[in-house]
Structure formats: C-alpha cells, structure tokens
Image 1 (cartoon, rainbow, N blue to C red):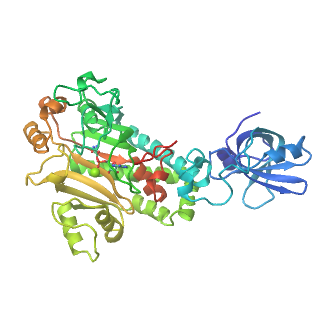
Image 2 (cartoon, helix red, strand yellow; image 1 turned 120 degrees about the horizontal axis):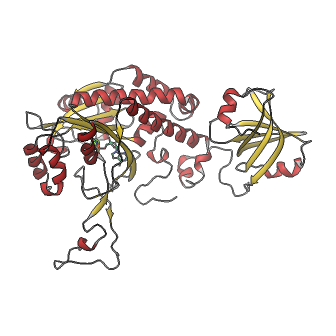
Length: 463
Ligand code: 4AD
Ligand code: MG
C-alpha cells in the first residue's frame, strides 16, 4: 500500500486510488451508521475527511478511541465527496489507532484558544491550524532564502555560535563558561580567572556571524550565514527574542547601494516564493490573523521600497503631526514608534533609511567624508519596524582602528579582523535580516513568540 501525505492527496488524489495515510484526529462527527473523521498530518492546513462505515470491523471500539488528538493510520479508497468543502474523501477499509488522547485532559479542544494560552502548551500548539500555518510558512521562508542566495552563487558559510568577540559592541552577551559557578577561580586581583576556563578566555554566545562572514567573503566574494544568534537584552517586547535566527549576506566589491539593492530583491523574492508555495496558509493569515497580509505581500513584490537618509527621516519626523513618546532630534537613534510612523503612516511600504550618525552605530560601519555619518542602512517594515540592519564596512585600516578605540574596544582583540584590512582589503557590504521578524511580517502574527517553535525570552525558556 502506498503511503501518501494529505497535502498531496488533496491536490491531486483521484477517485478509486487505494492509499494509506497516517496522522492525528482533528475532529470526529458521528452520525447514524457512520462517522466523519478529519485527519491532519501537518502537510497542509486542510485535513482529509475520512468516512468510516459501521460495517468496519471493531467499528464501535475504534470510534470510541478516535478523539481529538489521537493518532491513527487509515487504509482505504479515495472517493468523490458528497459533502461541501472537499473534492475528495477517504473511504476507510481499515483503521488502526496508534495512541489515544483522553478528551478529559487533552488541552486542545475544538474551540479557539488564545495565543497566550497556547504558549503555555508549547509542546502541543504546533498541532493547531494557526501554528501549522506559521511553521509551514517559516519553512518556506527558509527555503526561499537559500534558493535566492544559491541561485546567485553565494556560499552558505557556518559561523561559530561560541565566540570571543562582541560583534555589535552593544554588550548584550550571554557568557559561555565551563567554570563551576559555585567555586569560581580567582586571580590575585579577585577577578574571575578565565585562564582556567574551558577556552582559557572569556567566551560568549554570538550576537551575529558578521565578523566571520567578512573573513569568508574575503575569500569567496559572496557568502551568507543563516543561523541562531543570541542577545541578552532585557527587552520584553513583541519583536525581541533572546535567541533568534539571522540571515547575513556579505559581499566583497560592493558598496551600500549594492547592499540596498540586494536586500530589496531578497525580500521581494522571499514574499513571492511563499505566496506561490503556501497559498492556503497565506489566505488563512489574511482571513484569521490580519486582513492586510495579502495586500502587504503584493505591495512588497510590486513596489519599490522608499529610500531616504537618516537626516531626511529626522526632518520628516520633526514635521510629523503625531505626538511621539520618545524625542526626535539629529543624533538620537530612531525608536520603533518613529520607524513605524515612517513605514506605516507616511510611506505605507518598506522604507530604507541610510547614513546614520556614526555615534549610534557599530564600529565596523564605513565612515563617510562628512565624518559624522556612517554608510549604514536599516529597512523598516510596516507593523514591525526594523527588519534588516546592514552597512558598507570600513575597509580602511587606520579609520577602523580609530573607530574601534573610539567605541572603547581594543584593536588587539580584533587583530584577525584588522588583518582583513592589511591584506587585500576591498570595499564590502552586507546586512542582517531578523528571520523571526520576517516571518511576523509575512504572516501578520503580532507576537514574535508565536513565529518560533520554542521561544526564548527573559524569564522564559520552557519546552
Ligand atoms: O541590526 P542588527 O543588530 O545587525 C547586526 O547584527 C549586523 N551584524 C548585521 C549585518 O550587517 N550583518 O541585527 C540585524 C537584525 C535586525 O534588523 C532585526 O531584524 C534582528 O536582527 N534582531 C532581532 N530579532 C529578534 N530579536 C532580537 N532581540 C533582535 N535583535 C535584532
Ligand atoms: Mg540594527
């Protein structure tokens, strides 16, 4: 017997085909003499309707076991469906129950549950329609990302998770140690004696793979990373995670304009791919989560992003007819309310803000001739705010050394990074996309905790 996935049966299954499916019961409807069981195997939003006739061996006993959440295997024949809502259904010939789910205690009932409640059952929530759709779209985003870069000859490079450098210089690092915290070795000055630690030095979970991606770009020209990153920022917002995935392309022989062009083409590609591969899931988000999801996707694909400088953005914000909570003034960083005003209200599409003040940006960004701004760019999305942060990198050794010192860091600690400027330096640029923010943007899900299977946030690392 051929085992088939439900998505594929719903798409192309033909009457009279004999098949076998395996999955979990979503609902059961008992009528006189027969029953309808909706079976879902995660391959699609829609479930397959299985019709069980009371003539089946052990009908009564089996039906009793088939409650929501139970796992089963059905062998049968596909037949045209008499009912509304599906083209085809499976007439069961044999049903085997793998595992029952006690309806008294199984937390997922047919009614709609809140996302807050579903977070408390993170081990079961993926079996709901919403999370099924989210994680299929998340998968499609990842596939689209690899396709985009692979088609353009970018090399996927794997950068370390444990690192000794603070790429963003923001100090939001999780320590990694093998030391016994109950008996920490001390130096003569009573500092922690990292010489005795596993790596013989302080180490952290990485906040970004960029510095290592730059190393690889100086050999392979165009590379990208796609991996987990960690930030110990105590931000309990709907857009921050302590562990999130980042996509970081890095291109040699590229300036900031090339970087912005790539980022825009990249987002357009991902949206297009997801619309083509997950139309039902996207339709679901539009109907049930946020009725602007499809229009937004269309807008992204078909319109050019708005490009403006930080200086222009500040003057637009100063003129804005809204009361912001945080001050607006040249030199201050944009807050999420400012970012959202620009993208959501003013331009109604993604906005690329470039050339930020050097003082509020990382040491590696290329200093402009005005010596006040750096060649940085952020892409701001409606409802999300910053979704991409990138820059042209400082390729001049002397300028980079000065910037490192100005930000209170030691050039010696980054000797290998500076070597890239000593030997065969080239103009280069890259960006980082917050993968979960992309999935939020794509699906309209309001909380970032609901687009990653196992969210890590302050005070929360369950499941
Ligand atoms: O702007 P960020 O800090 O840039 C970098 O890390 C650079 N090294 C990237 C590069 O040029 N290669 O972070 C990049 C993106 C942000 O735009 C945001 O989308 C996401 O990462 N991000 C977060 N996403 C979820 N939770 C957090 N705590 C995040 N912090 C940043
Ligand atoms: Mg940023």
